[in-house]
Amino acid sequence: MPIVRAFPLGLILAGTTSVILADGSTAPKLTALGTVTVDTESRAGIILLAPASNEILLGMEFLKTFGKVLLVHQNKAICALVDEKDVDQLFEAAAKAIADQEAAKSQPAQIAPTKNATDSEPTPKS
Image 1 (spheres, rainbow, N blue to C red):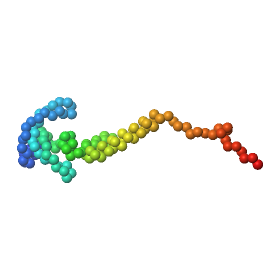
Image 2: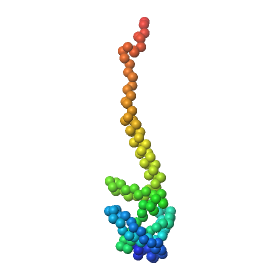
Image 3: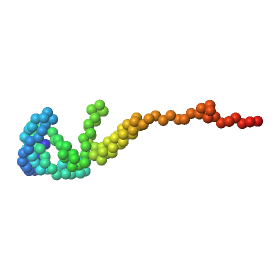
Image 4: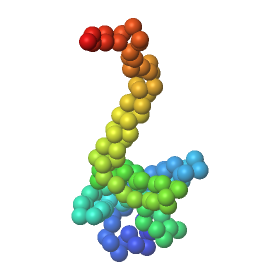
């Protein structure tokens, strides 16, 4: 959260922390205790303050407290917050489908029995 937006909200500084950025580098950040609302749910937690930022970012730890997962699909151009329970069910269904396919591949093919000429029924006598 930008510092200039934090103070008018009455956020109280809690300290500092180091964060690991996407490129692997670390950066010091000021922290404050605050409340975040996603949909209709609110949770308290540590908020990182950034002096040069114009964006409000919600970290993965905060998402976990809401039971949310960030779903990103580059080919479909989708980025959405999804309930963790829904994603778990999707993964379980996918894992079961894969296991079923693997089991079907490992079973030998079953060939239906065919009748031989010697197995035919006797012809009725007239």
